[in-house]
Length: 255
Image (tube, rainbow, N blue to C red; front, side, top):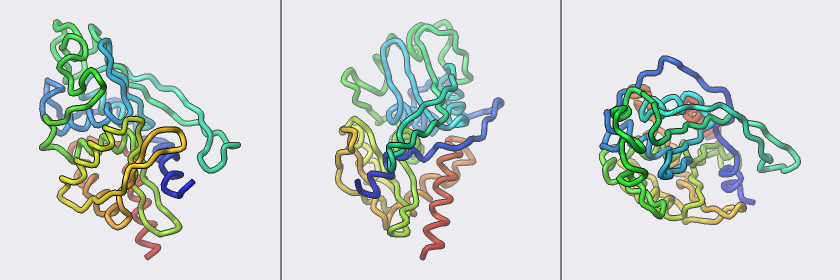
C-alpha cells in the first residue's frame, strides 16, 4: 500500500473538537440558493452524506462541523462512536466519535435557516426533487459556482484527508469516495481554483472506492487558500483546520 493510499484510509478528524451550543451561522432562508453556507453544506452532503426522498443524512467526526451544518439546514444531531481497523496495522482497532445530522421530510425541525414550517417535504420540496442531486445520485453544483472555496472545503471535510508525508516532507491532501463521478467533478472544481491545485490521476482504493491526491508541490498553497478567512464565516471543521496547520508546520520545519 502506498503512503498516499494509507493517508486516505486514515481519518484526519479523529480528535476532540470544539462544541458550541450557541453557534450562529449566516445563511439564507433557502438552503438551495447560491451562498457560502449552502455551498459548504452541499459539499459535506456530497462527501459524506446520503439524500433520499424522505431525508438527508450527513456524517462527520467533528462536533462543531455538525453544528454548523444543522445551523444551515436544520435537523437533529446524534452522537455515537464507530470502530474500524487502523490502516497500517489491521490488528489494531480504533474507536472514533461520529456525529450524524438527520434532516427528515415533514419534520418539525426549526433551524434558523430552514424553510417555513408549513411547507411539507424535504427542505420545503416534495421529496428529493429539486435538490442539487438527481435520481442517479449525481450532484449539480451550478448554483454554488461563485463559492468554490466553501464547496471544496465541504467536500474535503466530507471525503478528504490531510496529512504530513514524512518520507517527502510535504503536506498530503487527498479525496476519496465510492462515486467516481463525484471525484471527477471535484477535479473540475480544482482546475478553477485561483491558486495552483494540480492533481494526480484517479486510482482505486483497497476497499473498492476511488481516490486522487493534490500534487505535493501544490498541496500547501491549496490548503492555505482553502481555509483562508474561514473564521469570518464559521464554515469549517476545527479539527480539520488544526490538522492542516500542524501538517504545514511539519513541512516547513522539514525544509
